[in-house]
Image (cartoon, rainbow, N blue to C red; front, top):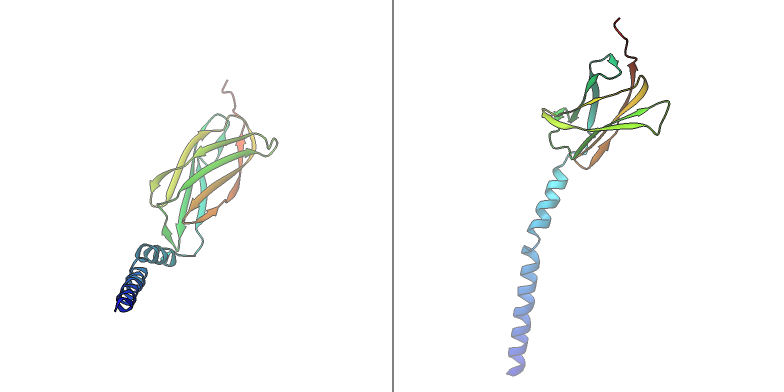
Amino acid sequence: MIHQRKLAAFLSVMITVALSGCSGGGKTESHMHTVANMSMEPIKVELNWSPQQVTAGQKVSFEALVTQDGEPVNDAKEVLFEIRSNSNTDKKLEFTGESAGDGTYKAEGIVETAGEFTVTSHVTARTQHSMPSKKLVVQPQYNKT
């Protein structure tokens, strides 16, 4: 008789453990569905600035248009514009991009010296990182005398 009670208690515990194991994975399963539904299409970044013709000491607006599957990406974790001198690679400027909506991220800055530079936008979004670069030529400032 006592042996049957122990067996019944053991079976009750085993059934409870089995059932809790089946229902306890809701959060993990939900997270897995989110990751599974995330597009594996690479993010695309179009890097531009204005004005197109830059003069030393002039304010420049840097812009990165971030898209994925042709749709704007408005949830980028990081957008950083790095401007590095081609003649002195130790010299660089960095500007943090802020969302302007519709997948556009902007930052303003001034390049004080003339010369050739490489502008690289570092974009981290949706578990991906993209670093497109473009050449920027900064013209010397002319005195108007």
